[in-house]
Image 1 (cartoon, rainbow, N blue to C red):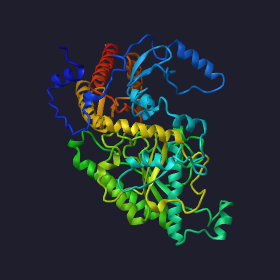
Image 2 (image 1 turned 180 degrees about the vertical axis):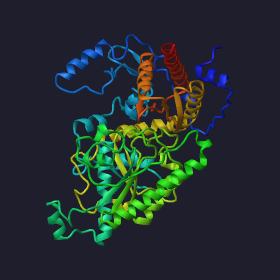
Image 3 (image 1 turned 135 degrees about the vertical axis):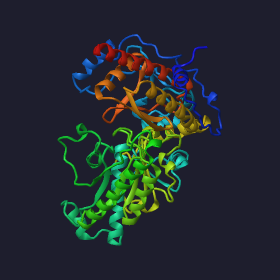
Image 4 (image 1 turned 30 degrees about the horizontal axis):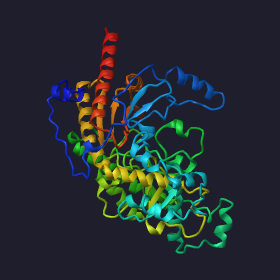
Length: 505
C-alpha cells in the first residue's frame, strides 16, 4: 500500500510522533463523510472563465478586488468548496475561519429542513433589544450560554466580530467611569457635555492593544488593529496606547530562555505604559488581546504571558478583554483558546463571532449596561443565527468535534514539521494548537506562488501577516483530508524548489 506523503515524509525524516488521543463521546470514525466528494477535481485554473466573467459583471457596480473566485454553495459539501467553474477544492480556510461544520452538513440540513421557527425568524427579523421573540431566553440558554466560558454567565449578542469588539469597548468604558464616579448615574453636566464631545461627559479613556493585533474595521476597533497598513491608511485614529506583542523564536523548545525573557520584556512595557498613560490623564480603561494574533501572522505567546497581562489589568483596575472572534468554537482543541491559560479568574469580557454564527460577547455581571440603549442597535445580533448555532452545538457535541480538532491538529503539526525538515529553504516556524496552525514561507512572492499552485491542484489555503500561511479547516477535517493537504503541499513545494534550481542554473 502506498504511503501518503505525510507518512512518507515521516519515514524519510525518521521522526516518531506520539499523538495524544483523548476520551470522546463519539469516535472519529463516526464522523460521516458520505456526503463529500472523494477528493479535489479540477477542470480549470482558479479563477476559471465563469468566475472571471462574473467578476466583470460585478465590477460594473461594485469592487471585486480581494475576491478569489465565485462559489456554487449548492454543490459545495463538507470540507470541499465548489467554484462557479465546477472545480472541487479542499477548503482549509472555510470562509475566513467561519464554517464550523463545513458546507451543507447533512445533520444541520436535517435539523433545519422543516424548521418553522427558523423560517418565522428569517421573515420576521426581530429588533432584539426592543421587541425580542418569546423564544429568546430559551434559545440563548440552549445555545450561547451552553458553551459560555467558565465563570461568565452573561452574554450580549451582536451581528459580527467587529461590532462585538466595538460594543465590548463601550461596556468597558461605562464600567470604568462608574467606578471612577462612584455612581452609575451620570450628572446633568456630563449628559450635556457628552453631546458636545467635551469632558466631563466625553471621557479621555483609552484602550491598550498590541502590535500585530486585529480587532475589526469600524473606527474604534480599527484603532486597535495593528496588523496591515492597508486596513488603516487614510482613516482617522484614536490616540490609544499600543504595546509590543512577544516575538517568539522557533522551535520553541530550543529557545525557552530567550522566549521567557521576551515575554517578560513585553509585560514590563505593558505595565509601564498603563502607568504612564494613567498618570497623563488618559486612563487605560481596557486592554484587548487575541489568544493567537490571527491576521497579524498567527503570532503566539505562552499562558504565562496572558496570566501576566491579567495580573497587570487587575493591578491597575483595567478591564481584561479577550478577543476570541477567530479562535473561539473549538479550532484550537478547546472550545475557547483562553482555556489553555489556566487563569485564576475568568476574563472580564470574551468576544466571539465567525464559527459561532452570530457575534457578541460574554461578560462579568458588573459589565451589564445600567440603563437602556447604552449598548444597543436595531438588531442586536440575529435571532435566526441563535437557532443555527444551537443546532451546530448539538452536532459538535454529538461527534466530539473539539476533540477531533485537537487530535487531527497534532497530526497536522507533525506533517507540517516534516515538510519543514524536507524543504528548509521554503518553510519555517511551524506553530499552532489544534487545527489553528501556521508556518512561514521564505518571502511574500514565494507565498503567492505556493498558494496559487496549491489552489490549482485543488487545495485552498490563505495567508496572514507578512509571509505566513494559516490553516482554518472545519471541525470535521479528518485524516483523509490531511493526507490530501500534505500531498498537495509537497507537490507545490517541489515545484517551487525545482523552479528555483532551474532558474539558478
